[in-house]
Length: 352
Image (cartoon, rainbow, N blue to C red; front, side, top):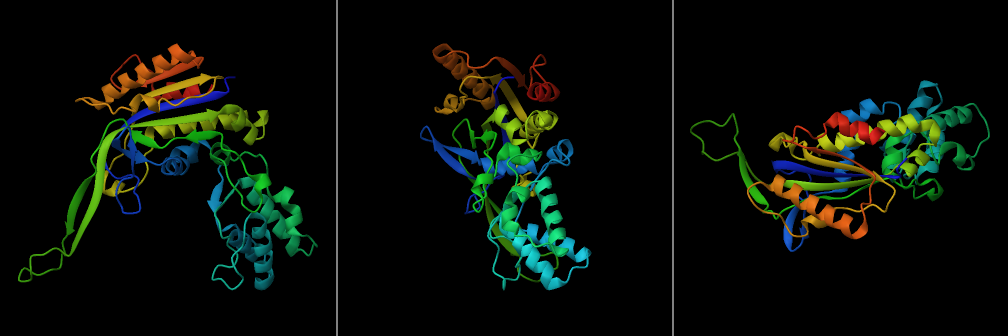
């Protein structure tokens, strides 16, 4: 099995603002002396992980990023009829294994200060320990860390994207997937949309002004996105050969989501529900490499997608000439080329 799976995607987004900065404008980056639109890897991973694609393909194998595990333990104990103060104490003790618990006088005393990525198996273990404590067993939850936290299990999203536990670093998981920030292949200008909202109940004899005035930034372009998957690490994170089927499902879901799922920012205003126009999937054991260098000089012309594909192919060919091919197998899709692969082909390639 080839160790690395690399994905290169070119996706056109119409005027939109799917990923905003702290001022509400689209995120940007300066590349090759030119301003580019940017979509952060965090926004992309969040959109994929919470998509219907992941939910369907990985049902029962999805973790939860939350501060509220203690509240789940508390609710569970409440259904068992455990007295309120005792239940809260148990919930705080168990939550404290996963992260620093909020102060006892806080309005949410069983929540952790940080978001914690928890697998289904770890959640089940937490509820089971809560039952034992409620039954009167003398247990120190902190000494049950090896029971409550796992180095590997079948949580596919944790295996793909990793996790960091500040309070229990031994149980951190290195992400099997590296995701770059997507950037436009060409220079862009962020534009402003000045808009108004009218008060439907305003009477004709009143002033003609709007009830609200606003301004929102937007931009459009062809984005290059690069992902690299360490398939050996993915299987290790999932517990080895016994979870090969989950690993295959995770890779297929990742491919489909990357091609079809857009971040949710301002979608009600712009409906920028994009699909990849070009995809190159590669497998091999050589050191992975991004092809972002193809766009160090911004592309131009009337057909930005075609120019982007051409630049990417040329840069890839030059890397192969200098460094060797670097990959063993490829699968390629380009809209408009009836002979190229389909979504189903690319998903099958990633799963194989």
